[in-house]
Length: 326
Image (cartoon, rainbow, N blue to C red; front, side, top):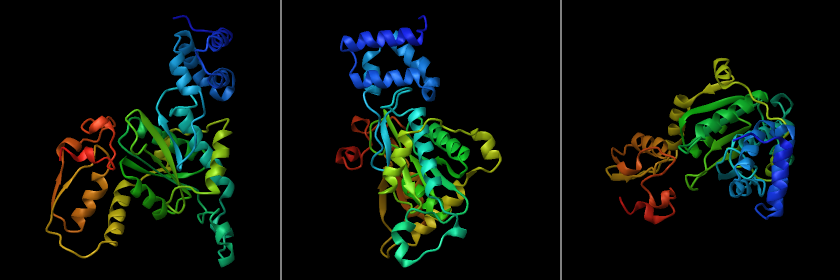
């Protein structure tokens, strides 16, 4: 296939729009990705799709801008497109988060708490060092997206505390608080199908972002021009990215044990992680609390972004049918 020039790609785009193979909003977004410098590295792939006449794929991934909601952005993965999860939409999410946190960050030496300042204090973090916690789950590309987010945060002046293995969202929340991070990023699409992934953003409280932070982050994300990136490997070697999984695993389990209730422990338990990360959180906590007879349901044990052995390949514990085989 002969690569299209930008002009010929735009011409074909206009023809496709006239023939109603594309929605107007998709055509407008595609033009931006072909012409604006911030999308320059993706323009060749966009042009290739146009040359191949992949109008359905192009319309699906360009008809809108993937929203930032429920604490983050989630959707179907595709290498290009503003309505898909890819390096650009993940990278700009991390970049926008970094810019917002830096805007509202106040060093601890300048921070004083008074009862009348409760609302304002929610806009600030207490650390003199900017810190971000990052974790990821078993979904396809989760590790890659986690490394991308870490690289962006480091390039923006953050020290990153990184869980270097499949871990749960509650442990990410704990890490944010344990290391007094200004924010956290969890790469997961929860109960979505295997085609999807997402980033969820957490505030210094360990909870998902709420007003006014959510809107503030959205504004930064939607206006990102340049995504700053550091090299992941050198950042690890220089201590800018800190692998802390063993330390946090132990501290997390101790924190969970601090909330245990009295009662019998001589129980037989069958546990299904549904191909996800639950085994790495629930089972160690149960064992540490004295539950000795725990069986992991074998067909659901493999960490897999394909969720192969659950109905419809959707790993949702709210769907009772996923447990029919147990």
